[in-house]
Length: 105
Length: 426
Image 1 (cartoon, each protein chain N blue to C red):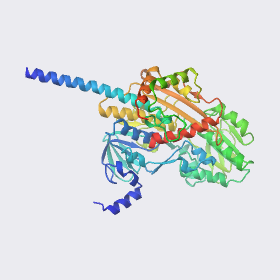
Image 2 (image 1 turned 135 degrees about the vertical axis):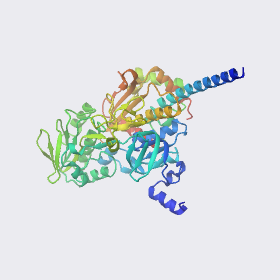
Image 3 (image 1 turned 60 degrees about the vertical axis):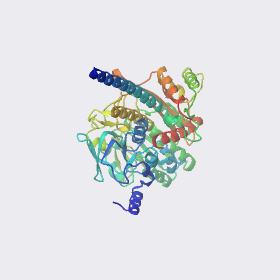
Image 4 (image 1 turned 120 degrees about the vertical axis):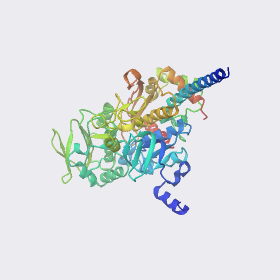
């Protein structure tokens, strides 16, 4: 009995550990994907002072999703974003918008 | 033990004082690090910073880079044109250590032992690693143009294709040139570092001549059959604005120079004499990649597993930036190297932490070119990793170029620079 309990405990904790690891992996991938915006929009979405390129950190998710959609369909004019936004899948746009909305301004 | 004063002096001599906060050791070189990064350009500096950030500052990183300051290749053509100074494009490395805890070792790597997982520095020290990220930029294939290496070493015929002292030296040559003189730039066959770079540079020199030396000429002598990047945009602007000043000649493959007579020799076309010669030879992966067997494609570029940028020649050695064999339509650019830096950082952090490697990494690229001191054109692209083909491919319908040179993009280009320098270094 005792051995079984121990075994169950080990099994449960390793299941929990792998679930946590999967969660960690997903968080890492989301952060790395968001970092592809950072070249222009700043590390973690915070641009340099006085930048004419907007910061994305803390931008409400719905607002960002609408802007990306508007870039993609051409209703919002742009210099580069109409071209770059078309390279991201809907899922990637969702991930990036979720990530930046959760960042402090 | 070093006494405090001698330590401070040694630190000043090494230029590492500003970086002490994050140093694991006080001025000495660590014998081992989880991650060692070779080269502090757009690729290596970004990788070093992002390994620290993405590991929540748990993975220690040593950056081996000889310089105290980063000088940007993008925007350096404006220094040659005279509208920016070298100070405008220079950023110190000390934030990488001070803010992000990267240990900056100011030295060069002289050899890599991938079996023992160590690098040996020119100064003699050896550093062990679990993961090595190699970002050495490009090297010149001097033998592709006879006489060029000696003429370059003497300072007479410059490349200025790595921003720094040569950028200023080329500017001085242009300033010293009499009005009525000729500046000639040769372009090697693609692939080379920064596809639009030669055309932007020629535009900058033409802009300078138009203001200061209106009888002078710019010659672009291109080994390629046409302008390699943003061709229609450059050619229209040249026709409208630099007519009689700038001339583009395709299919001119330079094969030799004569520094005594200032003559460039070509494979098929006649010799050309100019006052200021800016001769770009063929390029390859950076020197350390070449001599350590990482440049396993035609002994010139480094083949990698694009999902992780791990070398196909050595386990746990990752190669990024201009040295990498380009995937389809992947330019050798600073922006692209910064993008590589993030993909490799995420992959290395995942592997060292027992997490899954991102199955679908993404790369972006935006290259701005100034056609004068204010007007700019761009090319942009998005590259998704396609697992089935094990490579990055541009997304159909995405990317593109400017409709015409414009001032708004001039503003964005300068802001792009501020933000990518901060993203890479601050």
